[in-house]
Length: 269
Image 1 (tube, one colour):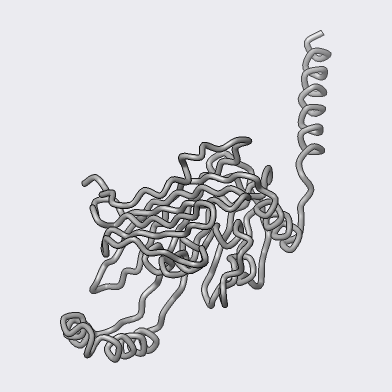
Image 2 (cartoon, rainbow, N blue to C red):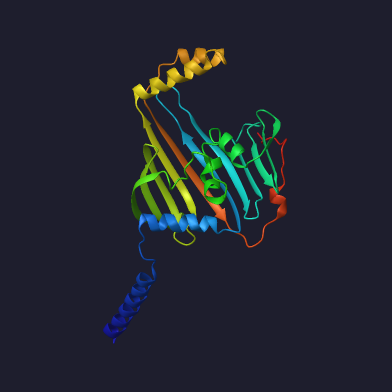
C-alpha cells in the first residue's frame, strides 16, 4: 500500500512538472524579442517608470562612482515628463516636459527655464549629465525621430539570447556589443519591457590620453581652472561601467497632474 501511494505521488509530481514545462514560453530569436519589445513600447497608451543609473568611471587615481534617479511619464496623446536628480546635490534636478504643444526644460544648475520646438532637443541636451537615461527609454516611446541617434536595440550587434530571472521576474537576456563595448539587456518575458541594462566600455591608456588632449584643447580658453587640472592629470586606461534599472508600470488611466511642469525645486540633502 505504501508503494502504491509513493507511485501515485510521483506521478502527480511528474504530471505537474510536465505541464509547467509545456506552458513555458518558447525560446525566441534575438530579432524576434527585439521586434516584440519595440512594438510593445510603440503600442503603449500610457507608461510610467522610475529607476536609477549606477555609473562607475573609476581608474586607479580618480575613483568616480555615482548614481542618479529618474522617472518618466508618457501618454500617446503627446504629453510627456522626464525628471532626474543626483541624491545629495540640491541643484541637480533636471525637468523635461511637454504638455500639449508647450515644451520646456529646467535644470537646477543653471536655474533657467528653456522653451523648445521639439521634445528631442532637451532630451538630447540632457544625455550626458543623465548618463544617457534621458534617451534610453524615450527613444523607444516617442514617435519623433532623434537625429543621428540609435536606440539601444539598433546599436546592438552580435547578440546572444538566454533566459534569466531578475528579481523573480522571468526575462530574456540579450548579450552583445554596443558602441564598441559590452551590453546586456534584460527584457520581461511577460510584457517585453526592459527591466535592466548594463554597459561596459574599456578605454586603453592611449585612448585616454587622446581624450585628455581633446579636453585640453576645448578648455584652454574657456575654462582655465579645468585646463590646469587636466594638464596635470596623467591619463590612464579605465573601465567605464553603467547599470540602468527600470521599474515600469502601464496603467489603464493616468493622472494629468503627472504632466505638470514643476521647475524651481531643490533635491533634499
